[in-house]
Length: 219
Image (cartoon, rainbow, N blue to C red; front, top):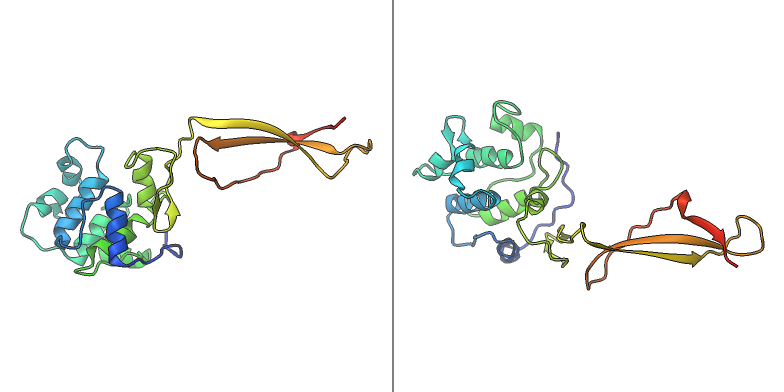
């Protein structure tokens, strides 16, 4: 895997803070970097009753688990941040990588930690794709980070998956086409199946053609 990230939109830190807080991340510009990273990680594991457990199962470095690191006075370094970020994206130490710096360079990891700019860094991390191809944010949204309310929610200029696909409106309409494929002198009717979310908002449309959509000519 190698990152070629062209869709990320850098934002001013005030917008970054606003969008992160809208998702429920308890982060602001006054937090120290290490505290911000801990708050971020605990929110990522929101579906654990005790978030100490997943932190204990992650590594800060190859000799210290993440929970122990957060409870210590050890400073946050670029190497530690990268090790944690890679794990949040699904990469496994000792399996996918044994040298964090070498692996970051190999995959052209697009997220670069800079001291004092943790919010922007975490914002970028959420918009980065994990090992399976989803963005980190799409992954946690799919696990219920924010409610499925049939309303638009945006992050970094993109809509999030908050429309209920298990309870949709299904409609069938017939549209008169300007063609006569059976050459009987009458315009064809095309069957259009509409499947849409229950929402008060305009929705983008994807149309696909199928041979099954061709119907009898109109009377």
